[in-house]
Image (cartoon, rainbow, N blue to C red):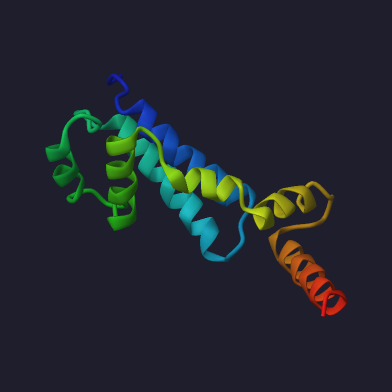
Length: 128
């Protein structure tokens, strides 16, 4: 069994995957969650560290599932030690409502979107 590397940065991708998986706003969010999970796993299994090695990012270009967005996340983490996107997604009120609605038995992502549209429509009509 090879030693696990890049644990911290892989956890960032795992957190992003979890947010997109448990509170999807758009149809593409399920794909994002899937892709971020794959990236997290691949980062842990690399035979080189990437945090303090800018040249390592170029090596990732040859690997499947590492796109421009993944590079941006890695570079932001390398520069700041965190990824602002996690805070933005966690503070998104719509995603918070989705998490609440999904706790209701029988309510899935499609029904949640329908309920959100209804809530926003009611809000707009009552505040005009």
